[in-house]
Each structure stands twice: as structure tokens, then as C-alpha cells.
Length: 336
View 1 (cartoon, rainbow, N blue to C red):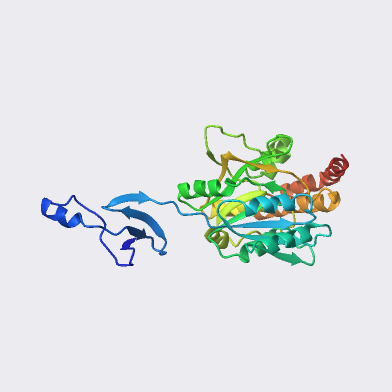
View 2 (cartoon, one colour):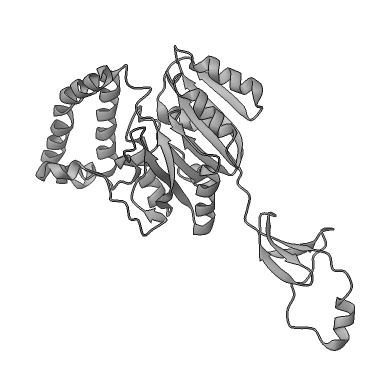
């Protein structure tokens, strides 16, 4: 780290108190100085005569929103993101919506140059679209925000402040609350253990209790509905795995981020309204097929190599035996 004055000249930081002879010289106006980190960004402000103040890095966030038949919520989502502190870019990636979604997005793009969109002619999946949006931006922080998540003006800036305070690579989420006031258990999760699920069905519950004593609670996985991470971490782990179409891609991302040394945590002091399942209500078979396929892919990637062939077969049967019942439940919920 080096210290320069406003004119760009390198200066020495203040050290020991000056002598009486030096005080007269020091009484002359002193230009404010700023310490530059290795990347050239301002880190510390030195106010005359030598008082050091820490200046937090202002947020510089791109919000990436993936849409598919999201017409009922995308207008409110984008309106709030455009008003959100620290959001300097918004990238919307649409996966072949056939409702009003694209028209709404285009209207926002015409009103705000920060909003740009990518229209996919087909639906390559959530993970692929997230990667497209992130790579279409060039700022230092990426927030993945579902079109059914409605942030407050300070949500992302406060989440960014938590990340800055950590001082380490991180992947952060928030408390997610439904319209009915119920907290989303997916906000805090542990890694799945599929063989443990064979022994005890209660192991299928991945939710981790909220620790009210912690403003920032470390967990193994957070929900993909809202995530904030530094671009450097996203690049290091090569983003989302495009092999997932729907579901489990967030579990996979969190696990790979942890393996890369990142902190996974939930900001318990930040709540976001999450209107769940808007895009998936009309396609229960499609959604459940890819959800179960994603679970099998996750098992193969992280657990299968440690299990016997018999256990692998048993896990496959367990996953797919639940598929018909899951379809019926989702169909019933969509009709309700």
C-alpha cells in the first residue's frame, strides 16, 4: 500500500509527533492524502494533519435477474432494483417467456440505461442464464436476484457492507419471507447427505435454524433466490454449473465456493420478500423432472465417489421414487 496526495505525489504516512521546530512548518495547510491499495483503489483517507479515517468502499453491484414467465412480478422487481443503493448495472436474461415479461423488461430498459437484457430463444436453464448475465457485466460485485424477490432500497448495500466487514471471499444471502410472513427454510441449509436420507427420512430436511444472536450466520448453503458474491470468486469457481437446469445449482455453487475458501453466510438482519414459485406453477412435471435430475447430479458430483455401488443404486431409486408424488403435490398446489 502507498499513500499519495491529491496531486498524485507519493508521501510518507504520519509517524511520531513532531518537535516544536517542526510544528511551525506543520501548521501550514496540508493537502488531504489517500492511501491506495495494490489495485490502485482508495483505501484510507488521511485528514490534515495526519488523522486516519477508514472510508468504506462504495457498492458497485450488478443485479442479475433470470426470467421465465415472470410477468406478474418482474415489474415490481425491476422497479425496486432500479431504486436500490449501490446497483450500477442490471442484467435481465429471459428464457423464452411467452407472457408479458419481455415487454415489461424492455420498458424498464428504455427508461434506465443501467438495464440491459438478453433474450434467449429457448430455455437453457437457470444456471446458464445466470452465467450469461454475470458475464455481460463488468463490475466487482454480482447479486443474483430472482424475479419474485422484492428488495428494499438498502438491501444490497447492507449485504455488501456485511461482505466488506468479513474481509474475505464470501457468498451471502438474506432472510427470505413469503407473502404470508413465513420464513423460507431454504435461506439456511446444510449440504445434502443422501445415504443418511436412506437411513433416516428426517435427514431430508436441510434447513438450519436461525441463530438470532448472529447478524451474519455462517451456513453450508444459502438460497439461490438472492445471492451476493464478488466477481473474483465467481470467476475463480467458473460460475454456476450449466449441467443443472432447475434446482440444486445453488447447493452446488455454495459447496464449490466453500471448497475454494469462501465464507457462506446469511444476513439475519436483512429480510427480503420472496413470492415463491411464480415461474414454475404452470409446469409441474417439467419442474420436478429437472429438480430430481439436479439432485442426482449433485449426488454424483459430491458424494457418489465415496459410496458403494449398492448405495448409489439405492440413492437413485430413492430420488426417482419420489418424483411422481412430487409432481402431484406441485400440480395440486398450482391449482390451489
